[in-house]
Amino acid sequence: MNHINHITLNTGHVRQSYPDEIDKHLYFAINRIVNDSFSPADTPLLDGYILKSTRTKEAAIGTVYSEDGMPIITTICTESNGPLLWEMMHDTATIPLATQRSNPPAGPYIADRLEVGAMEHLDAMVWTGDFSRCFGWICLSPSSIR
Image (cartoon, rainbow, N blue to C red; front, side):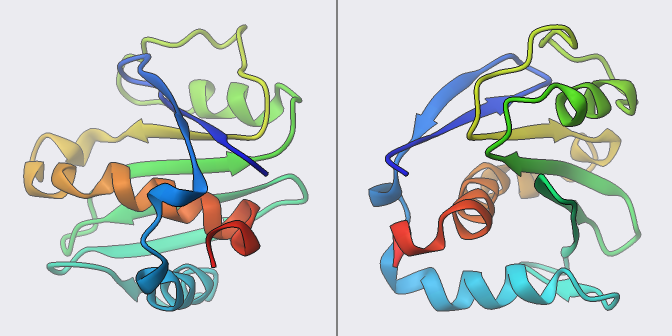
């Protein structure tokens, strides 16, 4: 995989993410965090934030939460071109989105949706975009970033 489309649903910002953007020295730590996040237990990230994730047949979905349980950002990553996951991210949004439910991107993609807690936890906005990019690469093509 040579790149992944990375979209922020709230702003409509789109960029291409490349494997060389991921620090290879962080691979094992990030891989452990992401893999641990699929268990029922909370997975610690930075500064008290936690990650909870799930997998479907087509995708991996992760949400970063604050210590008080507020969702900060939800990230979905998939190779699929199907509209189901894209539509789900729009249908379950609690704040306005700039992207259109009827216009899913070509896969593979990472889609970030800022959640209601993002405004109360602006400190997390410094690193969540980078983290979601790492989450996407670990879930979709870990061999590309090793």
